[in-house]
Amino acid sequence: MSSIPEPSVNDLSPVVAKGVEKEPVALVDISGSMTWAVTEGSSTSRREVVGEAMGLLVKSLEDEDSQAAAEQAGGSDEKGGLLVHLFSDHHEELGDLNSSNWRKKWDSIRWGGGTAIMAAWEAAQADYLEEFGEVPALDRPALLTLVITDGEASDWDAFSTVLGQATSQRKFCVAIVGHGEDHDRALAAYKAVEAENGKNVRVVTFGGETDPASIANDLILLVG
Image 1 (cartoon, rainbow, N blue to C red):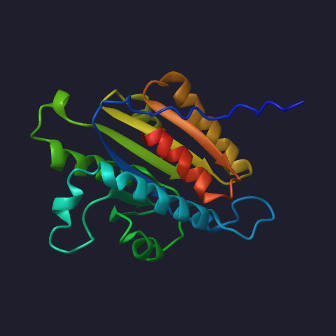
Image 2: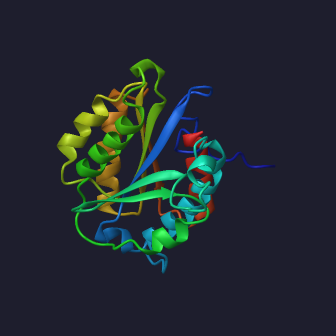
């Protein structure tokens, strides 16, 4: 008798409806806890699993970046790909990640510090407005912000307000990795916002997932 697979705990339908133009950006947690084991007893860190998953994700997204070919026409791999902002107790723009440069850029990250997300979000929003600010609001692509974290931000109150005000033009997908009390507390906090604004905020958990391909495949489905 064949067993029926358990349903996924995550809704993996695209966050932005098919056919709707989108501009994805990623906010990645680089706090000290991201260097901890992805699950109890594992020798693999959260940052290692997320890094490999990001490499697979950016490769998948490259073909969707209509500006990538023009941006790289001069022979540089600095432009074109998924724009990534980093957050801990400070913000840093990592820049565009693509299959040519992601490893070099990922390896340059300095991990450590606390978890404050608002500066990264504000910078990502400013980049979006710089590129599309002169386009009528209804004609702009939907800003799809992918947040990858393992805990609740110290400025959660401010960011939860941002999530609560998300719209069809400004959507969020939050992916939570790791395990333990911090993971569970963050998941509960983000899920509470999703319950109020589920059309525009999607929250998924990867718990102690150690397979980067599994994480990447799910993120690819969510980003669409």
